[in-house]
Amino acid sequence: MLRTSQLLALTVLAGMLGIAMYAFGFRAPSATAPANPVLTATALSSQSGSMEGELTSKPFVLVELFTSEGCSSCPSADRNLEKIAAQAKATGQNIYTLSYHVDYWDYLGWKDPYAAKQFSDRQRTYAQQFKSSRIYTPQMVVNGQTEFVGSNKKSSQQAIERALQTKTKTAISVKSFVKNNTVSVHWKTAGLGKDDQVQIALVQNTGQQKVSRGENARRTLTHVNVVRAHKTIASPGAQGRLEFSLPTGLSAEDCHVFAFVQTPKAVAAAAKSKIAAAVKHDDSNKEMSSTPNINGTNKSTVYVSAYKPPTTQSQTTQPTLVDEETFLLMLSQDRQLFAVGIADAKKNWDISYVPMLLEVARFLPRLERTRVMSLLEAQTGQRFGQDNNKWLQWVWKQEFNPHPGYGNFKAKIYQELDPRFAEYFADTQDAKIRLDEIRWGGVRRDGIPPLKDPKMLTAGKARYLADNDVVFGIELNGDARAYPKRILAWHEMFKDTIGGESVCGVY
Image 1 (cartoon, one colour):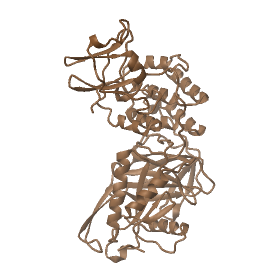
Image 2 (tube, helix red, strand yellow):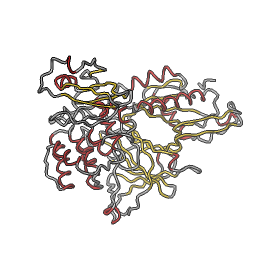
Image 3 (cartoon, helix red, strand yellow):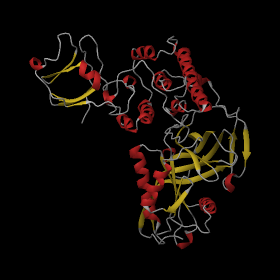
Image 4 (cartoon, helix red, strand yellow):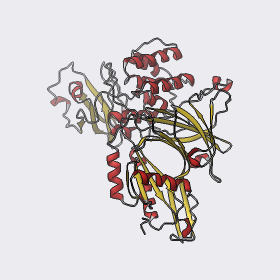
């Protein structure tokens, strides 16, 4: 009932030029920096517990489902939400899902173990916003603006597509860590309005329950992204801290933290954080504001405004590796967020940051680019100024020990240039070349048409070539091919089958 072809990376010398081939269809480094891509402070999606916050020009979507295990109409909506979450994971889109289990159907014979009055109250708040006199399950709400029956796949898809066209100037980032079953959350914001609220949720990744009574008796129900605790900061500062207790029987690996900014009429920004292990430190220099009753429910203590992560002796000698999201934060058009990112990188310096900072610098305005280059010079002792190519030549002489999030970082930057670029970095573990050798050549994918399986002539018939013309020569499994520079200079890339192997080459 309704409740009211394989790419082979090669390095080949071609005549006098020493041409390097790069995998994934990217052009060789250009001495001219590309135009700045527009990365606005909208969705922030974070995947680890260090400084997090992905700033991207692509809008985000938050899908909230109000559901109950005591409602026979809800399992189909739960499945719809699960498909939306799977679609987002597969496509890399900034689509987030939350499942709020309401308690007002518990009297029907089955007490939903995930339900809370607080979540029912949140749904009632939406009812007031939508000027509705009733609440019902299953109900979906997209970006706090659109509501409909949660099992309606067409409505959910249309609402998501509309939300993906919406941009915002508000931003939020979040990081979290656990110690002794207590999850500490640190959030930062930019661009808040005077009536905006920060919402923080502790979310169980997946859940399964065998229902023995009520309308869904003898059914095993599965859920994704189940909200287990939720706190509202009604008058947030630029940053703050709060704590959750892990639910009984769950570990940090079973959960994540989700943060978002809610305006009186919409959700304006969102961020997600895995829960990391705690880094031991002294809390003596945090300003504390006691907030005994957030959102009328759980008691907690919130730290606001003046949070300054202290540096201990162990952190000085072994700094915490910052997340790749820190470098994406620097691409914000908001200088405050840029300052947060560069300060975190400086404080927790590691040599693996160098190629990531060089990538960031290519897309920054002059002032911010100068600050990045100054940081590089101070930390490495090199004096290359803003000559990106000299920096890269130096980097390529060092042993390649990349940051663990380098591939994900490149995917997120390059998808801003062309969303199709992200798929090239989906799995970089088996890459035949260094990731720092892959650079954007100035066009989108297929912006310059490649040579695809070009027709070949014997050398004797290639009368258009002069004796001093340079050719790009490859021999593989006894099959020899020559690609004239005068042709490759126009196409920049070829795809061919040589010796039974699929080959991609970039000039």
